[in-house]
Image 1 (tube, rainbow over the protein chains, first blue to last red):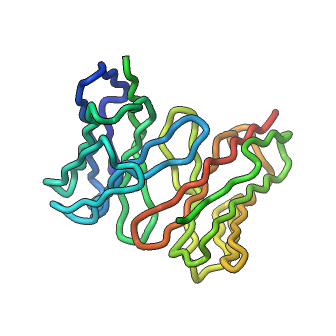
Image 2 (spheres, chains in turn yellow, blue):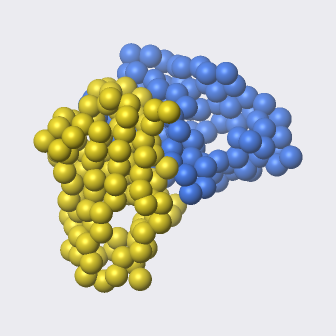
Image 3 (spheres, rainbow over the protein chains, first blue to last red):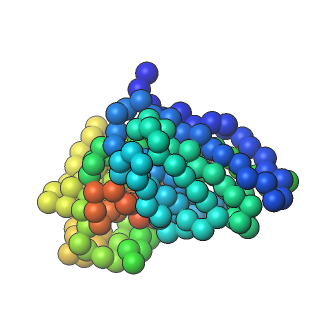
Length: 111
Length: 111
């Protein structure tokens, strides 16, 4: 089936630790995105990529990093510099200027 | 910066009643507007996409209108069912890629 796969579904991070969230798509979409969702709030854009080996910061990029070495993959690293990382993280992809498709999300909790 | 507002934050209706969900945005120079559904702890599912040149889109029991000049969109869901219970989010884009999301309206349809 075509779609977007995020892993892991649940992740726990200790203070000072970096963690990486995986996102893979087989929809052949050029653009990929990472959003953060906090309870009762809308989604906020962290990073997006329009093409392989290129990506741009979104509205809340501080404390996060990404890479886009393959069209299918857009992993997100939550670094120790992100002081409040507990949230629901959503990966998405889209053809240019068209409907955006989301993965099932990953829950990150700081312990 | 584009601001997207959805009022009310929550709505409860009896089964069979029509639903009217509102979305307003501050910058009328949008590229498109999308409505999404989100079930608890899940990713977003696209319901309707309205291009800036369009006034409305329909899919089954769903109809979305767009009035760019007033910065408003309305999602109508006819003859609501308990399965329509979810959070509905609208998002607007100013270009081919980046979306600005509202916080959503959480709908409960009572059987």
